[in-house]
Every structure is written in C-alpha cells, then in structure tokens.
Length: 115
Image (tube, rainbow, N blue to C red; front, side, top):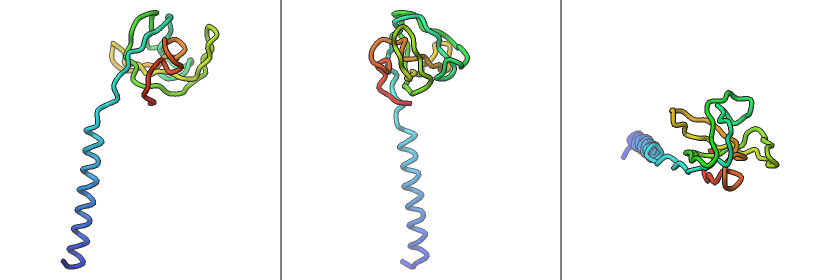
C-alpha cells in the first residue's frame, strides 16, 4: 500500500473507531432512578441551593424518584447538617433538588449515583 493510501486508511479507521465509541456512549443506559423517601415536609428547589426558586415539595413518608446527588449549599435543620442535594424527577415533568437532610437513609438520601 502506498504512503497516501495507508494514511487515508488510518484516518478512516480512526474516524470509525471514534464513531463506534460515540455510539457506545450514546447507547449506554441512563443511570437508574433510586426511590427516596422524605421523613418530613420540605421544599424542592430549581437548583441545589436554598436561594433557588421553589418548584415543588416533598412530604413525609412519600416516595420520589432520586436521579443522583451532588454538593450544594450547606443545610442545617433539625440538628442535621449536610451539603448533599438529591436531583429528583418531578411528577409534573422536569427536575428539582431537595437537600438530603430531608430524606431517609444516609447522607445522600441512599442515592448511589453522583451527578
């Protein structure tokens, strides 16, 4: 094979590998939601901060779909302090964030996936 044909084959092969890798990433299943349970009534915010707009709320002993957790504003309430917030799938569509302080379980509301 001549030098230019070899170079073209490598370039096309590299593009094929990149496309195959992108296809695998696109085909990866989304992280599964985890059922979380609130232990008290609390606001659900548009972002992981108390200053964000309130978009919904959680109620004691009700279940919600927790998608993942991330760090945000520190929340101190009822003797518990935590920076972890859980991204929830809202029943009305969209997402919201609730402090893990208000969820049963560990310091991440038992949600294993980091956002």
